[in-house]
Image 1: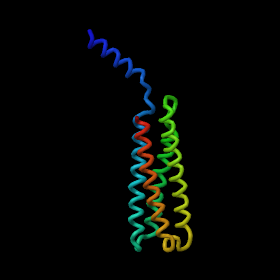
Image 2: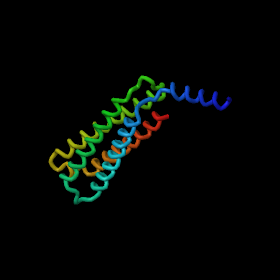
Image 3: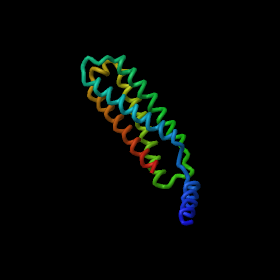
Image 4: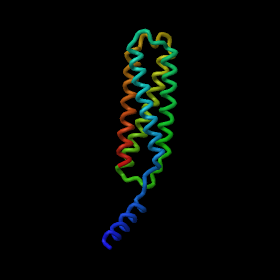
Amino acid sequence: MRTLMLSALAATVIAFAPAPAAASDYDQILADARAVRSEAEEVKLLLKHKAAEEAVLLQRLDVIGQHARSLKDAVDRLDTASFTSKQMAALERARTTAETMLVILNNKAAILATPDGLAKQRGLLRAKADGIAARATTVEKQLQQLRG
């Protein structure tokens, strides 16, 4: 009898506990954040070599941009109706960080578009790649806080 009551109570708690968002939303954000981080780290390594070709870097930046936009869109799609104040704060940090990543990517592309941008700004470009990777890691951490 006691086991039956505990089972009924557990089922009631589980049934009424609101889920902050679908698991697929979280999985999408995580996948995009990891892809952004790994691509940014690869760009950083490419920039350490003086033989890095601008076309390869532009292609990598395009891939990073696609994942960063997808990440931002997935964060914006999260249903916040059942979020606690702590989860809302984590979501806002993740959203702001995703927006910052996009700004850094735009700045990086603008630097590469200038004549001799790669040759003269290699260190700055490497620092921006490092910043993008760090922000992708931050989004992953914020997502972990959202999951509770």
